[in-house]
Image: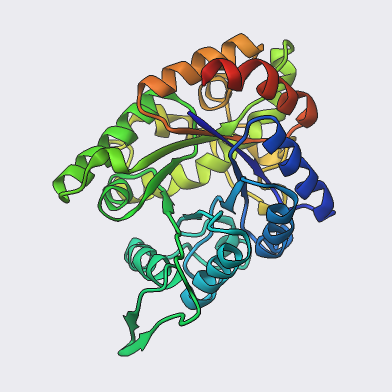
Length: 331
């Protein structure tokens, strides 16, 4: 199993760069960031510094979207970083939750997302595409490589992952939900004539190593609220009795609104509806042994990477614990 670190690009950027450097020293192979350039600083500027400060770390957004930047701009950003640092980027992409809603817009359609995946990948890897009747190619790209991993929860999106994407990003560490979503992606890949084993499976969730479970829950309750935004979209589309497992949908019954000012932050006041049970299911808490056990369970389900959201008050301690007690044991 690979390991990734997920950060918000809060200023100063030097802290983000240093945490990524420390993560690589502790055995992490991927460095991810949020991509909402109103709420946080522009990540692609910071990626260049992260890549310069590390030697093998693969970096990318978790997740970008097809509308914040034109597809040609997104492809050129990745291709430029790859040309400078040697194909060390990955494109995580989704419909655009916080990046769109914080400026008063809705996430894009699945159709637009699906079309963008192939265009961004082809352009970044030097192939010609046709868009709006015009043929386009980045003529300076040589030997470019850009895997595109898609974030998804619902049946249609999971099918699109299996059909089009190089990887799947699931933003919850609940084994039951992982089992259903990974199975759906694999089935879609097989139906599309692809080898399901070629689609990388990434579970992304907060992790906090320690013994004060009550404190950990309060520090990580924000995550249930963040996931709840996507779940609310699913319930609106499919209803309470739709195909999405109740393990994912039932807990948002008490959700009354969401202020993106507090998005992804400990102490988010809009996440009081999230029960302790959801925090325990969606996140990794407790001592190092509990983390090892959950990761082993996820590995059995086919998870190739665990990406650790590090938004709480013991970031350095958790990073160190993963480097010394968890990653070596899981690998």
